[in-house]
Amino acid sequence: MTSASLPERVPHTAIEDIIALLLGTLVVSFGASLLKQAGALTGGMAGLAFLIHYATGVKFGVAFFLLNLPFYWLAFHRMGKAFVVKTFCAIALVSVFTELHPRFIDISHLNPFYAAIFANTVMGLGFIVLFRHKASLGGVNILALYLQDRYNIRAGKVMMGVDLIIVLTSLFLVSLPLLAASVCGAVILNLIIAMNHRPNRYLA
Image (cartoon, rainbow, N blue to C red; front, side, top):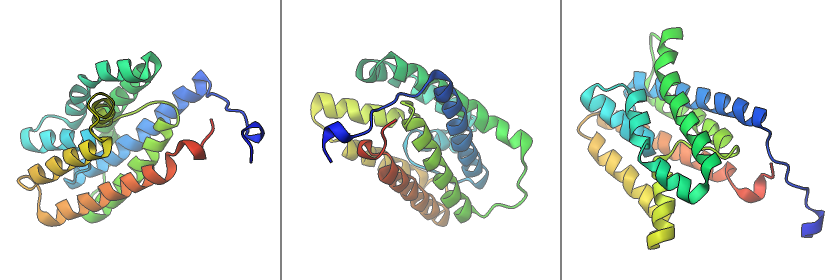
C-alpha cells in the first residue's frame, strides 16, 4: 500500500478530547481505587504515590498530584502546551476520582491477587484512551523521554529502573505474595500499552 492510499488523519475534536479525558481517568482511577483497597501496587508514578500512601498515610490522590508537578515543565518543552494542559487535567481528575470512588462503591471482600491483575488491566485500557487523545498520567514517562533526548539514556532503561526501585522499596511495606501479584499486574498493564499504543495502528 502506498502512502497516497493511506486514509487521511482526522484529529479529535475538543468535545471528543473532553469525553476521552473523563472516561479514561474514570477507568484508571477505578483501577487505582481497587489497588488501594487491596493494598497492592503498580509501576510508574502511580506506584510511587502508593508507596507514599502506604508509608505515611497521605492520600493517594494528593501524593499522585503533587509528585507529577515537577514534570510539567519537561512536558511543556518536549510536547507542547496542549499536551501539558490535557495531562494536568487528567492527573487532577485521577487524583480526585480515586478518592471519590470509595464514597459510591463498597466492596466487602476483594482478593488481592485478583485486584492487582484486574486493576492493572483496566488501568491499561484507560491509559490507551488517554494516550490516543494526546494526554498522559506518567511523570516517569516524560522524564524518561527527556533523559533519552538530552543525555541519550534509553527511556526503557529509565522506566525499568524506576519500577525496580518501587519493587525493592515495597518489600518493606507489602507481603511477598502481594508484591508478586502487583508485579504480574504491572507487567500486564505494560503489555496492554505495548500492544495497543503504536502509531502505525491508530490514525485518529
